[in-house]
Image 1 (cartoon, rainbow, N blue to C red):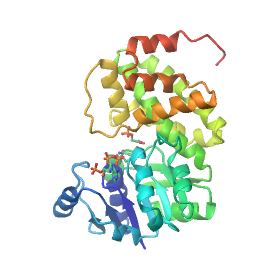
Image 2 (cartoon, rainbow, N blue to C red):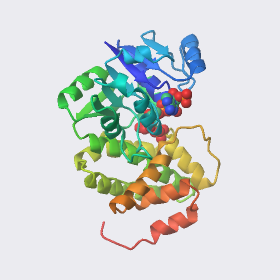
Image 3 (cartoon, helix red, strand yellow):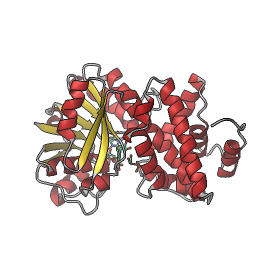
Length: 320
Ligand SMILES: NC(=O)C1=CN([C@@H]2O[C@H](COP(=O)(O)OP(=O)(O)OC[C@H]3O[C@@H](n4cnc5c(N)ncnc54)[C@H](OP(=O)(O)O)[C@@H]3O)[C@@H](O)[C@H]2O)C=CC1
Ligand SMILES: O=C(CO)COP(=O)(O)O
C-alpha cells in the first residue's frame, strides 16, 4: 500500500523520508512543478539540507497518483487546508485523511481535523502532531508523536502504518485536544521568542510558557478536549520543544519581533494567523486568552512589545 503525502515542504518530505527508509512506498505531491523537477533530479529537498530522498519516494506535481492512495498525510500549512479540501472534496471522499498541520483556520475557526470533517464528511479524519522538527525526523533521530483519530480502529491502523523504529506514535481518540495543543503551542512559541528577543530573560520565558499552558488548558477544556491529552506529547511536549528551540520558526519569528528585527515573510509561521483566529474565538466564547490576544496584536502591528508587556504584567493578581 502506498502512502500519499500532500505537500513537499519540510515536514511532508521528512515524514516521507522516515517512512520510505522503513520500507513503505510513498507518493509525494507538491504544487510547484519546478521544485518537483529539482527534487526528482537531485533526490533532495532544499528545505531539508543534507537529506537524500530514498528510492521508495515518488514525487509528482500531478494529483492523480496522490488520489490513488487510500491514506493521505496532509502536510500543507493550516491556512491552505480549506482551499485544498474544497477543491478536491469529491476525490478525497472515503479516504483516511491525516492532517499534519498545526493551526486554526482564520475563516472557519476550526482546527484541521474539524475542518476535514466539515468539508469531506465521508473521509476519516485524523491528526498527526507532537514535538518533532522535520530535520530531526529526516535525520532518523528518535521522535515521539501523537496520532489522534476519533475512530480507535482507524487510529490503531495509522499507528502501525506510520510508526518506524525511530518515529514512535502514541494514540488517542481525543482529536480536539490534540489539534488544539498543536495550534496553540505555536502562538506560545512566538510569545516565548518575544520574551527572549526583547531581552526579558529565561525566567520570564518560563513564566510565559507556564501561563501559556494555563491558557491552553482553559480553551481545550471549554471546547471539549481532555486535560490528559494536553499534558501529553501534542500539548506540553510540543509546547516545551517549540518555546525553547532555535529550530522553531515560530520561536525565531518571536525573537525577531521582540528584538524589532525583520523576518523572512516566506517562512511558514503558523502561530501568527492562529493567534488572530484565537483572539476572535476568545471574544466569541467569552474566554480569557491574554497571551494569544497580545500575540495577535503584536503580529498585526496593533501594539508594541513594551505596551504588550505592560498589558500582561498589569493584569489583576490572582490565584495560580
Ligand atoms: N517543519 C517542521 O518541523 C514541522 C512542521 N509541521 C507542520 O507542517 C505544516 C507544513 O509545514 P512545513 O512543511 O514545515 O512548511 P514548509 O514551508 O516547509 O512547506 C509548506 C508546503 O506546503 C505547500 N503549500 C503551501 N500552500 C499551499 C497551497 N495553498 N496548496 C498546496 N500546497 C501548499 C508549499 O508549497 P510551495 O513551496 O509551492 O509554497 C510547501 O510544499 C505546518 O502546519 C507545520 O506547523 C509539523 C511538525 C513539524
Ligand atoms: O511543530 C513543530 C515542532 O513540533 C515545528 O515548529 P515550527 O513550525 O515553529 O518550526
